[in-house]
Amino acid sequence: MANRIVVKNLEAGYGSVQVLHGVSVEVNDGETVVLLGTNGNGKSTLIKCIMGILPHTGGELYLEIDGERVDLAGKAPEEIVNLGVALVPEGRRLFPMLTVEENLLLGAYRPDARKDIDRNLAFCFEAFPILEERKHQLAGSMSGGEQQMLAVARALMSAPRILLVDEPSVGLAPIFVSRVIQKIQELKEKYNLTVLMAEQNFNQAVKIADRGYIIVHGQIEFEGKDTDELRENEMVKKFYLGV
Image (cartoon, rainbow, N blue to C red; front, side):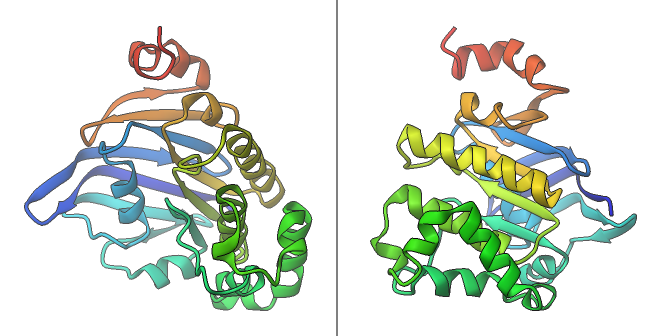
């Protein structure tokens, strides 16, 4: 059951402002690939294109699901979710006036996930015990780290094959960043997920990434075949490691 993301020479933007300039990225089956870049360089724009939230204006964007190519051009977000793609969005985007449990159940909306609601809910509570303790608490009343855990768990409730994670460390205390990143790795291994994670916290991202890309001003400036190549890159040393 191979699941793969392929982006070739992608062009996209907002109105007259072009953000992505010929971006090419591949995430192979079972990989965790990190897309590194500071704010405003196009990470979230690429994620939105893959999810169908933002239409691309040029290039190719498709998935390979069980060996079959599925072109994402023109597909609505709900169609892409039904293919088995889940998003943990930047800023979490929870329903603050719904309970933890209600937010999780909304994540199981796609038809293929409904039959396994009880099993997936039990697994989410096992993975994040704090969510079970607070399942009747309003999501908006939890801390930022707890909300991020809920956002990850909500994505898992859709029984995804491919997981997109957009800036999981934003706004979190360092201890929560480490916990959330590690939990993404654990869940990826348990579910055999293919993961694309957009992140600017280099030190945390490379703990779980197999390899990665650096995006600058909407262009891929470097592709590291492994995390060692990323660490040795001059841009990484200058902008992420302070060397």
